[in-house]
Image (cartoon, rainbow, N blue to C red; front, side, top):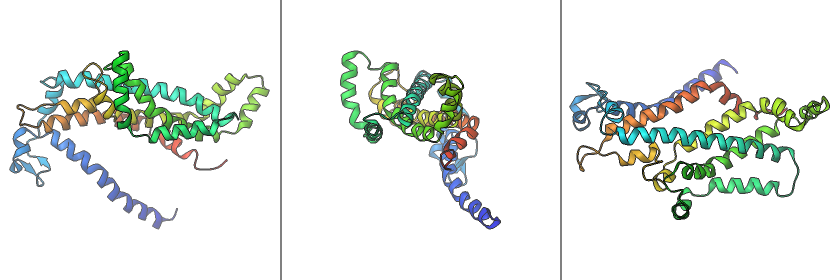
Length: 282
């Protein structure tokens, strides 16, 4: 790449970074504002952007204050449910995508088409029948009752992504392993799985983000025992019915964003490798 192209790309990336970071910084700044600063512009700098006297009161409220009983259980539910849905989705999608990419059987294209159709199906259209069914069979407001709908969100997407990765792995490598005495399972576990690891990590991250950010299922299929953070934020209350707890909601949003940032930082190389592994043929 020429120097001119590098400078052009660097210059073009700056507005995109600013456009992306400003809302996040704004939420963090709002989480540091007191109730007085939220209603009085003179207590803030840079217009109404940053508080003159930052305070951690909103974070204390969600961890030790009145919002603790609502936020902490919801945070734990989000971690357990989203991790469970991600692990189950990636494991099932790995075997399904491997079979689709390696085996020739009737209905293979139908499976992929169905998975794609399910991923595009409106979530709100599935809530009402699931709500009635879950109440009848006892899955309403339970952790399994939320993991199952999350699989409907993450599994089709995972199958599509992993199918593309497995198709990039040469079939001859598995045949060579089997010639050397490996069984089909050993060839998959020792040859295919390590080569597909970047794709699996990328799929897991995308599936986790999809489940972590869900609002509709969590809001309608739970009441308290399995409610996740996105839905719990809608039930935050202020000092009175006329007060909106903006600072506490922003503080909770910042805390919820931290696991996502940590995952991206820890697996950044894996994600980049997985996203680019299918870009070059051969």
